[in-house]
Amino acid sequence: MGISAAEPHDVLSSIIKKKTVTLEEVLILRRQVWPDGKLSKSETEMLFRMHKAIEYGCAEWDDFLVESLTAYLVDQAHPEGYVSEADAGWLEQHILHEGKLRGAAELEALVTILERAVHVPHRLEMLALETVRDAIADGNKTITANLSLEKGIISDPEVSLLRRVIYAKSGSRSDAISLDEATLVYDLNRTIDRGVKCPAWTMLFVNVISNYLLDQNGYVTPTRDRLREIDSWLNRPSSGVIGFASAVALRNLPETRSAGEFADIKSAFGNLSPLDDAYTLRNNDKSDGAARVDSLEARWLINHLCREGLLTLNERALLVFLKTGDYAVDPVLNSLIARAQ
Image 1 (spheres, rainbow, N blue to C red):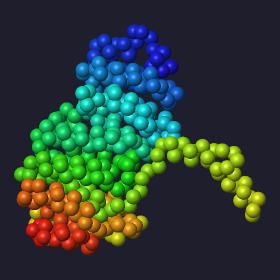
Image 2: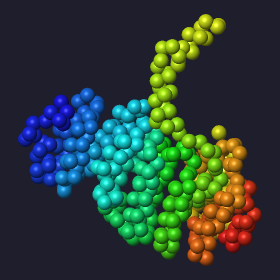
Image 3: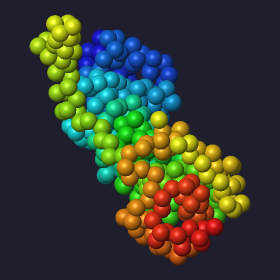
Image 4: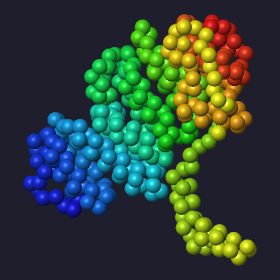
């Protein structure tokens, strides 16, 4: 029995009327929503209706909403894990208010979908990143669910959110960093209070920007329509796996290394071991154009470095990383690297 079959005065109506939800009610809903392990569109929309009505919720309700949305959009998609443009638009209609995410539960749902899906429209990834960026700039404690958040100050919880989105499985270029991602991370770095150090942010900043500059492997996840074609081909009796097997029967991933050259950066990175497992994977790519900063990439970096005249700690860390990593760096960056050291 799903939500659509619920009696008029059952727990669903009660939650909407009293605008609160308890752990016991969440347990009842779990039994009503997932008796067959699947959610219908109408059931999912009812959950949104309830969520918008609730003024006093509980952590179990937020978890239930996140799990339900992920199951509906990712696990029940065809092919599984591919969120369509239409479903992305449907999700935006329910989680946005005046162009902004409604709250922390919506942000967590969006990030979880990005992590679990194989592919999502790029705008959903950027929506999540922009939401975290704006929350840091405005000191919005509600959207990040971090009661210690202060305006213009980034701390470990926000870094963790950014890391989850940037390295989500559904990213538009797999492990590589896109221009949009790199630009947003750089712009965020400019708005953060420089008087408060956050080693985790320094690490993520260097990781993201250096990856964008050094790795241009050109990999793009296959589109949802292309996966449908492949899925159809694989299951066609006259071809695909069956056809291929019949025909055969008839015919008989350089370790990164960096040594910090001044105390601030060493303090932030420790011994500057590989910054992330993800970075190590990307840096092992041997394709042409990897592990070097060409003239176009160098100009992009200079345009950002020279906006305010003085190099920040994170910018100095980035330049030292490029210098000490034995990468091929365009000579136009040499003067800035010398300033950083």
